[in-house]
Image 1: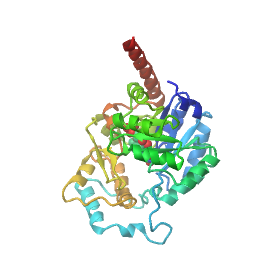
Image 2 (image 1 turned 180 degrees about the vertical axis):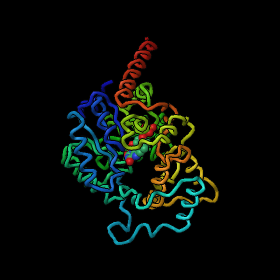
Image 3 (image 1 turned 90 degrees about the horizontal axis):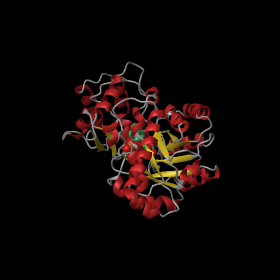
Image 4 (image 1 turned 180 degrees about the horizontal axis):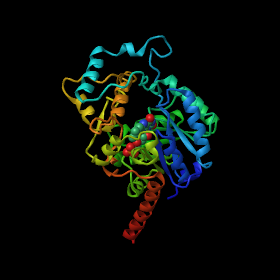
Length: 367
Ligand SMILES: Cc1cc2nc3c(=O)[nH]c(=O)nc-3n(C[C@H](O)[C@H](O)[C@H](O)COP(=O)(O)O)c2cc1C
């Protein structure tokens, strides 16, 4: 399983793994893929600095990437306007009522933290500055093209830039802005998704950007067969997210038994695409929490970044409660195949082995 992008990054397999966990990212890179650390959860740049130093020391010198979430600047950014004051009372009381109804207890006094500030343009810029002092080989951006000056800065540091796209026209505009690699993110994917399924999207994007721009297929990839399909559609590699949430290394970040029960029992029908996590459509595990927001009396989710500020404390309470029926977690339809907790190295070995078997099977068909 070797494509040109393996040489670009000095990796053995064209398997890119988005993960909020540095332990997962390091293990993927050590196993020959490219671990990409998601930065959005870091409100504190010192913590990000320490985490990237840890990655520098724990990848056996192998490359890794960093993912930032850089949306457009909101009009009040950099002013003294308190964003939380823009959240309507109706939304606050709905969240509190819903948590009570679902039996989610409050956090102990003094616990909890601010909303995830990584959704702000200015915070994403500070993540980038910290990251460029380390040795990422790739900076990826979740929400559209990063601004041209950000792309140029990455290039000055010898770092390539990837951006997620859910439609061919977005991919074309990323390339026009100077983005190097397109992640073609299909409807099945966990987190922010568009409306086009991977099977249709990947060849659309491959054809739209032409042979000089590498495309990584994303959305619903959890096996070697799916990697083979993605390469058959013209992608140079795959960009994966959900499957790493089921690994032993991820338990360093989220270890409650409720989470394990929730993802191991979920089928591919148990996800929903909704604006309740960030204000933009994202695929989440379907639970009593997502169902409550779909009821007729629920308010409309707020725009980014207000929705995440609204629900951040609720997420902390839900996570602390560990109730598998209520969990709030981005995950894709591949969750139906995530049935046990396994080490990253085993998952990687299986992906590679099944890919080889698939190619052998296809070769036999060709003859
Ligand atoms: C828990 C979770 C959090 C995610 N957060 C981000 C993020 O912060 N930035 C980003 O670029 N993509 C994010 N994604 C999307 C992944 O980068 C990736 O595109 C997606 O998971 C691929 O589809 P799959 O889940 O079917 O593998 C997230 C996905 C998951 C499952």
